[in-house]
Length: 440
Ligand code: HEM
Image (cartoon, rainbow, N blue to C red; front, side, top):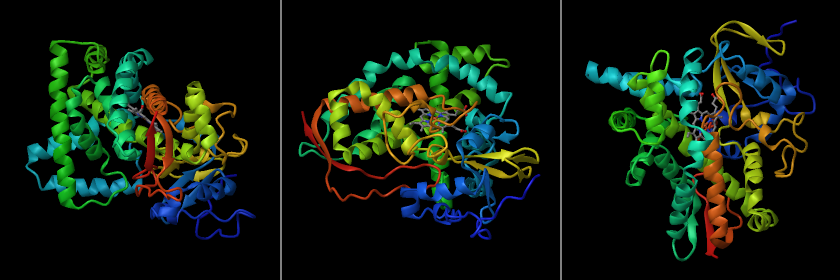
């Protein structure tokens, strides 16, 4: 029998020993809640397969198996608004700003801001075609070719740490390392690194932020600059192909059925940079924070760098950089006996699935020796599974290998340090990580 989902405000007694779910602190981005959202997820899993949050009009799916169920039905659960209700506010802000521009410019800016409507923002059959094309360009072999260059970039960054060893690891390492790797992947001169950082910030600016019209306009301008740069780069690769991702993309795009348009190709670039930089930054900084409070684990990784990949997989499960994304139901449906109406926002909470006690023993422990390390949901699940996962894994592994090899001590500057997290319930990452690094 189908039921209507419980409401977070009216079912306070319904969940037995576990407190009733309360998502208000998360949606309000209260620091304590976004720093450690996990105590807010456990009551959701206990309450049932789907929790309806009436205040935000969102259906929350928090158990591992149900997340798999939603994510493997992309026609029923669409990706057309994967960032959820708060981004709708940002989109309406953008539409307001676009309405004040010259019509031609507004039309162009509209394409730029919707990232060509590809990949992350597309459903089958278009999405299947996008993945087939990008899979040919973003292969493990293509990532493998970059290994030594990424290692060189990480060494340069560590060598540039201040001589007193006091360093904000987020700004000096976890942010530039993934950006340098993306510049290498796209074969863009490393001198454009600062532009990459600016572009990535602008692409992600609308996620969980309240922007003024002036800020929105500035973001649109930066993204149009990015768009123009990549249009020219793609043209150059068409005329003189190399071995980089863009050249492979241009060749693969011609064979697409139908061939990819230029806007779709630049949309790919926009998503690679938008999805690839900040997420990897968050993995490196979170994993480093975990290590700083576990000296025995740090010593083990120094002695056996081959254990770094296992540690990183467990860090991804333990503290996922992307806590959850949204789907939109395309028809009336049900999940686990709960009705979900057409048009509803469904929040697939990867960070909660990763702590599901029916899948992971002692889920709140960080244990790099647990079985099934790669089963976590930090890269999503199903057809939208992170296409950049091989690059993310390689960059984070190399970043740790280099930092451990070039240092004898890494410790928090202040042992009582409490990180401040960016105000988002989707992205999960700290603003700074002040550490002391002594050279080996
Ligand atoms: C630790 C780092 C990373 C994390 C945690 C992460 C997480 C994710 C997640 C959760 C998704 C699934 C989206 C969904 O469910 O709708 C995703 C998709 C995606 N990721 Fe990543 N990502 C990371 C690194 C990267 C990198 C390095 C790149 C680019 C080189 C990248 C590019 C993408 C793209 C383009 C998609 C969309 C795929 C599609 O919709 O088919 N990601 N990522």
